[in-house]
Each structure stands twice: as structure tokens, then as C-alpha cells.
Length: 371
Image 1: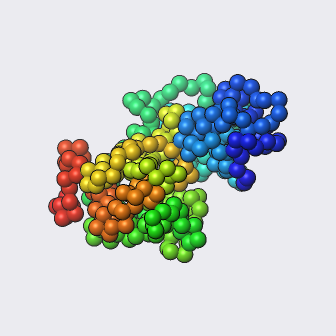
Image 2: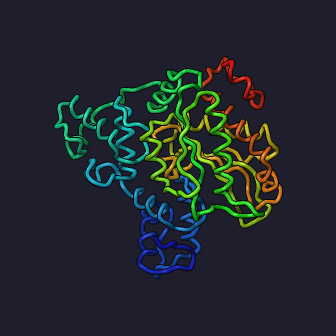
Image 3: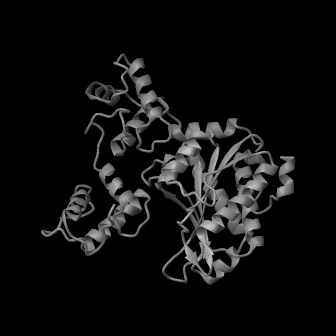
């Protein structure tokens, strides 16, 4: 879709401003539909709150999030019919069903098959027509019942228990590696480096190390492929991967920007992947401990790959190709080997019980054979 930013005008801008006003982020839309400074600030605040890229530009992802944010549970009938329903009303339904003990998976705001199964289970158990449609009678029942699951956020409890039951060993686990961009989309470019090529190389180095310890690895693309984030997520879900590691490098208009950051799914309003957050923290800490890259910390985002994957997923932004220091490190094969080992160690540490988890930066590849 067309990108809308400061200075633009027209009916689409008026719609964006109306949504921002409804959400309480814009005091009042201007008489003329002009994308002005207050609108820019409101868009940035919305993007920050929703875990999107904060750039003040309304593209497809921000526009979809604005549309989704307007919806409250009960505004429309929800069901698995044709294209998936997406919105805050779906997230509210998922949270409510999960609180009542029905597993919708991660509360991601997408009405998919697992949400439908949970809704039908709730309807059967409470004597309603089990049609998978959230209509008036189902809404009344949902509002009348108190919360049954206690002791923490239900999805977080389930996610942690699945991790615990999978065991400490890496052998037999499935990890999907996702080198970002691809084909004619080279991603960030700077100092003679291309993000897509760096991601491919790092994925190959990590794949070899994972295979050596018995992990079954899948890769989302080859050199000539560039699937969408939705297609990458579908591949991970169809393969029933245990983890997804998405590999990227960053860029910035300022050559002074540098450092490494890791991202996991989270909305900023409570919904998050607990295990994904821990995994992102382990990745970030291991890389920072083994390299001299600036620590840009761990952050939650609602990017499609993070949101649509059903397993813990992290996205690594390994330095800025536009920074001379970061670029020099990224160009060094020995540095990429170090990062691949850091990623392998982070994956192993995710599965270790707390009493067996070594300090950050200590575990090495030969040590994994004894775990």
C-alpha cells in the first residue's frame, strides 16, 4: 500500500487521524486532512505502544494495527470463516478463554484454528451451540464466568511447562533458521556489505553447529528466495519447529548508530511470549559477552514473524552495516563464527534447568557434548 507520512493529505490521512482520535492519541483531527506534526507524534506513540517500528510512517503494518486497535470484543461476530479475523477484539477473546482454562495458544489477536478449537470447547462445556462463532450468547457466558486459572498468566504457564517437558538435550529438537531478506531484496547495505548475504552466511555457520549436536535444522530460504514474513511463519508452524531464529543486520541514517539488539513477541500491554523473551535475553547476553558490540538490549515487537509463529521466536539485529566499526566486525569470518557459537549456547541454555545453567559467556561448543 502507499506510505503516508508528514506532509501528505487526502481521505486516507483523514481515516488515519480518525482512528488516532478514537484511540485517544490525537486530541482532534485538523479541519483539513493534512498529516501534520501532531499526527506524526500520535502515529509514533501508537507504534511505540504496539511494538512496531517507530518512524511516524503509516505503511501496511501500522495501518493494519490501527484498524485492529479500534475493535472491542462484541463489536462483530468472530469465527474462522475465510480470511482470519485480526484485532484487539480477538486478543480479548483469547485472553478470556485462556483465563477460563481453554488453550488458544499465544494471545496474538489472530482468530486461527487453535482459537476456534478453544472457543468450541468452551461452548460445549457450558451448554452452548458449539459452532465456533463468538456471538451474543457466547459473549454473555464469557462475561458471566469468573477466572478459573490462577497462579500466573495462563499462556506463560503453558509455554514454560512445554519447555520444561521437552528436556535439556538439544538432540532431536527442530530449529528453523531464517536469514532475512533474499533474492533481489538485499536488506541493509553499507561498507560493501549486504544484510542478506551476511544472514545467509551466519545461518550456514549456525546450521553446521546445530547439526553437530543433533538438532534438525530448517532454513526458510536459499540465495534466490525471498518469502514474506507470513510465509516464513507458515513454514515454521507447519514444521512444528521448537524455536525460530531470524537473522538480520541493521542500518541507520546516522553512521554513529551501532550495536546489537534482539527482539521477541510482545504487545507492550501484557501479551508476550515468556519463553521468547527469555530466549531473546540469552541470545543478547551471550553475544554481548563474547564480542565488543554495543548492547542495545532486548525489545518486544509485534512484527509478523514474531506474532504469527506458534513457537518462541527471536529476531537478531547483529550490528549496523552503516557503522564502520560494526561493519568491520561483520566482515570478519572469525567474528561470525563467534556469533554462531553464542547463538548455539543461547539455544542450549534455554533448555537447561536453572541449577545447571552456567554463567553467561562461559559455555563452549565442546562442553555441549557433556550436557
